[in-house]
Length: 434
Image 1 (cartoon, rainbow, N blue to C red):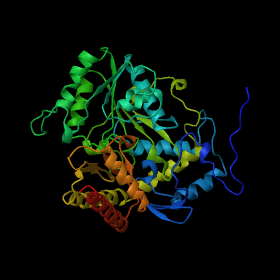
Image 2: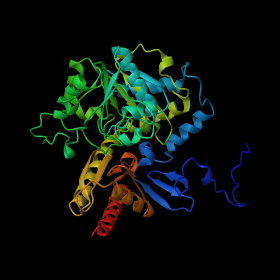
Image 3: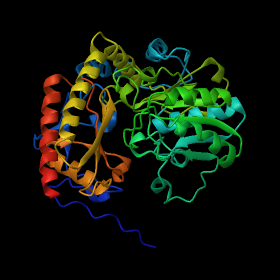
Image 4: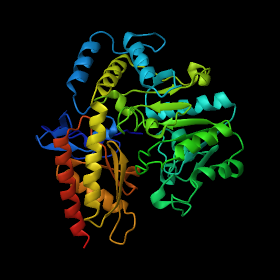
């Protein structure tokens, strides 16, 4: 059999897009600074999504760049069997900011998917049970097992594997309540009915409940008051491990170091990643209670986990976020954006809700008939990019929420510019819907 080589690019060009597994966007990013990204033609884009919500300190933060330069000449990576000064410093800082009771740190993960899998393994080892309860719209990662545990059927549809041992339950989505209740009289059925799912839809051997305190990719759904506290109570009553996935909500995104602080609830395991890398270094891990220790490392260690360079950057990121006034600015700037967007919602027909905490905000989009519209949401994101505004949509383009999650360094003047441009975007697209 003859194997044909791929056609070479035309002389004088560097177009290799035909070799990508799937086609990339036409834009060629060249550099970034703060909340702005620049393409090869020098055009400036205001990034409302902080990359993939992982650039908590924006593009090329000078202190992060300096840390990279300093550490790269000494040690970039070493097997995680050994201690390093950056690794120890990061552990010290993590324990210092962790919710009370979470005093063990596992850094040998390389991604959020990896960290969530490790958390579930810890729960299974600790309880001797197997099943996992997760939410309909939960996004836990991209690996086969995490797709199985995540919500949304479209993510599992192309793959032939059984997600046995996973029980999916309705989200605490008051705006579109699964149980058709109102919050003032519902008695938190979205928690109470989990007992029925455990009793009748599981194997009876539930090890863990895993939730995002505020949904990331699932539509920026904020848990209502009392939900997480009641969920904590349910897990305690049934001796189930409670896991908070704070991959997207952690390290200042909500105006607190962790979203758990907003709700006054401490899980047994808290997973983290994304924003800990400051300006884009890949790092993830877990914070756990003492009683969750004991699982052998070979079950949960990843090759690049605890990377020395990433650990140094992560420690610097925590230092910066912990400085006086930093999180206060996140809260104040987020409140300003929420006020502007809620005012906008009263003036255009295609916004039915604006919700969020800190700089983790979602705009729910509907069509002219008031129905959730993924198509219109995608169109808004496309028009936004053409107008120099980078926005991401929920559920990988299958959802109807535009996500507003700029870098945490966003200042008031930049927030005003962003809101002005989002208003212009919605007014233009809303007119198209006449």
